[in-house]
Length: 266
Image 1: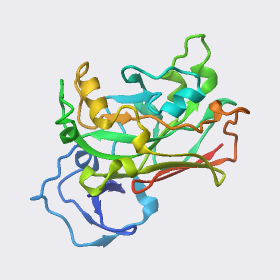
Image 2: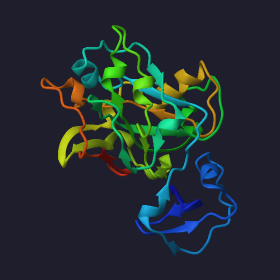
Image 3: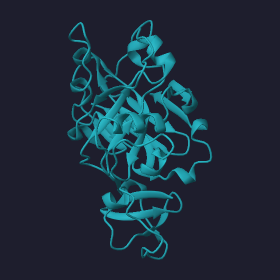
Image 4: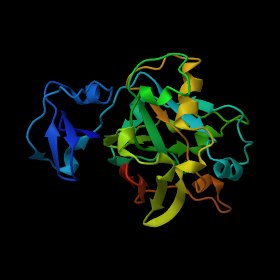
């Protein structure tokens, strides 16, 4: 099932332009696994893709995972993590899939990622049952101001990744039963039409189950929480000649069957 927010109404999408309204549920409730087979839905209706909005805009918690692809760890000279390397983004940074980003500084970088939306609360969740707590997955962009991130000799992540519109989130939530093999899904980032990142999700060091089990061993996961699961190599900061976003650039991030983001830099 593919779920979306169409002008404040919960929709089950059936194609790029058609879907069914879910009656009696708000979009954020759909993103928290509140839909059931007994829910009332409308007849098929058309919608405009431009009218898709954020399904989750005020999550209680946003977790992000650093160095979750071995090649990305290598390009930024970080050792592979023994356990998930977690930081946070703040909800005020969230933006819909098609957005304009006001650059904070001259070293803003891209990181396209799989994002997990938690569907039900839980603590001390086992790996075996972890996927039962997932409402769905989408694509996200973890934009990063590298000057802020590396201002100290010991990097700090959260603030440099939480400027306005630095947490771009896909407008369509896909339930896991829609995806035959998540490992085969491919992250692709393009800068002005040129591919700068491309890798399958099979390269993730810590899978969704690992991340949920680890996080829930420390905190109580809540419905609507987001987990940005990490990015592959190809970031601007990791290149021999570093490249950063500048006004006028168009950045796209996509995951094969989960949707695409389009961000225009200003």
